[in-house]
Image 1 (cartoon, rainbow, N blue to C red):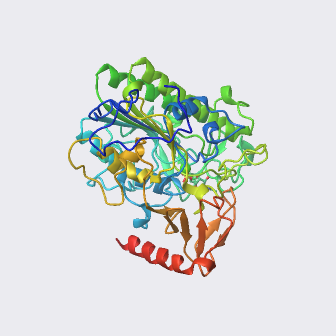
Image 2: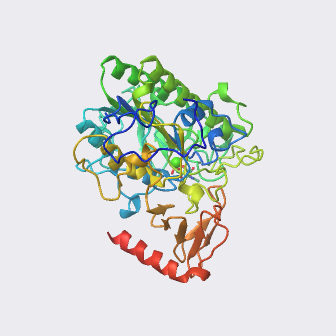
Image 3: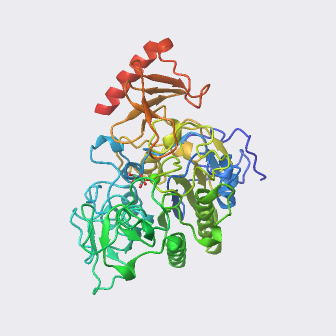
Length: 513
Ligand code: NG6
Ligand code: CA
């Protein structure tokens, strides 16, 4: 049927005997829900609520993701679990709020694995239900025991967390080591040129961004002045591994080719699979392939988003070619909100051309405001999900319990992860009634219905740069009504002291739960 965005979505079908076929009239008998042949999580980095044309961007065109939104369900009130990367990904894979652990923060590239290999994870739950699993792209959850020898097999890592296959980079593209790790081994490593990594000191005789700025193709605006690799200053020092180094301009192609190959192999084997495809875009350093340069109207940051969209196009093409699209559950989202200058002088601000990366929201990456963790979230599953929009509040952390509902019987999941399959599939707009937002560390806010409460003293950051300053929530706390005031400009705490007290108490209770 022709899709209609404004149609009230998802008639409340008898909850939850089954899901009606997407094509059929309401009178048709409900089909029993059968799990999809593939589950693909397309996960962008630092992509904001306003960075896609299907979420209102005008200076960036993202036709492949727009197509997913047109044919699928576009969520307007979905959250990542944090406003920075590692905590967000930790919560996604473990189903646990990241702030429950003090050590879940942005990790260096030589950090130990954060996830307990003995604990439950989203991919392990899917493995238990017959899926093969793969992670391709950014990991940023630590590897090994904290003393990784990059020249030997590295464990524990993705495999111990439930991924049968992995093709990853350890942290971020601005952190060493700048190499891919495939199934626990550095790819293309020449044993005669071993890799050494240090986040403390440089290696004798090697240049650094700080001492040798003449070597830099992209200047730093803050930090990023340790190792110089491919003319880009990085965080951390690295020696050796020349043949293994990635080419920044090819990262998107490298990971997409691996994803396409993975899809084709699983399809040929008629093997149900879960692919967690974690792009480098649009994180810094933004260095898209030259074929994308100038393809947006807002500079290199927009060009990186166009490149990311093209990765999605190629992955969807592989699904089409293998006949899997109709019965694949594809979810597109981002790990945290947008940032402009994140430590490189790449002209993100100068070339913005009026583009609003957080759309109508305030704040971005690192912020407790909505722009920090309210992110694009699109669900595409032609066989089971009708096109439309959803205002259901859900959090990526819920995917573990929610996807568990695809399978018969109770699936293991932590209590933080809520079962919201009817909302995910557009059968109801009832998602979470409460959600704890996290900017980073222990900085939290509480959402209940349309209310958002930020406790006294919590940092509130409105700017969109890595170094933007933060205000502090006043002694009353801050209370916003997101419905009337989506930009969180009007603190109504004074007028609603009772509500603030109620939310403060509830937040304390949930923190201790
Ligand atoms: C910050 C980096 C930033 C980015 C971020 C992690 C500087 C000045 N800033 O410390 O560039 O790497 O960490 O981003 O070094 S995230 O998306 O992985 O959380
Ligand atoms: Ca990120």
